[in-house]
Image (cartoon, rainbow, N blue to C red; front, side, top):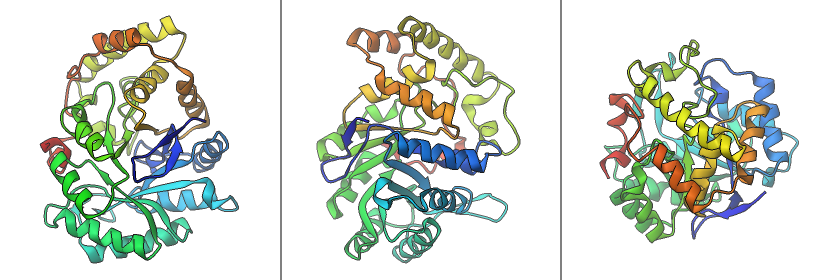
Length: 331
């Protein structure tokens, strides 16, 4: 497994991370034994970075990871946790809370659910519009001093917020959606992170399966949040799947899968970028791991970006209400 440095102030991690959200129902029902087997397979393959959020399945995801890690060397896994999103018992979203006392409350519960004595990277999931980022980062810094957190990260923050956060405490990485069809970070966010020595953990590298080469229209199941995603809506999805077929032709010429070339493209955009793959089955994990062996030349990168140029995607990456919470979209 190749290793990458996660920012100047961060840890060394595997060149590929495992995003565990889909194991807690966001894409419909998930198979618990298969999810745990996939986490085990990832660790056995040398993946060290496991990404979760305390609101994934209202704590379900953290407990799942805790179960998967039971009996294993704690130091084998680097656990990244997002916090702050508020949910009702029905699963509906209620906004964000990143007040200092909320930070300390959330981490106390996460430590219990995960069954660990520290969290490797702790990050607010979104910018709380009612709380200055300096106060939120200051509270996490207190948790670093107390030994409950090793590193501080950010998620979906804009360039100005990133600078303000980094002035309070070293930031190891920014987690943000980055893929062939989500290239907004390239404008100001990536340059800012590179100036400040902050790494990138890129989620949505397959755009929630849309550019995986496997997803087909009409395959959504109950509880799958993609039903409400603009890029999966009629009128948009057909255009986006045309992009996938163009990418498939390039992948075929290299003897790799669509998913592998899409993941490899993200990984090739910089040694400071660690793609997160949302595999929840071992076969999908195995395919994603194969992306690490895909070598893309400058000519390959140019050809890929010619068939999927920047801004080619039809539809926003989230519904309007969720887009409004993205500080990164205001950068």
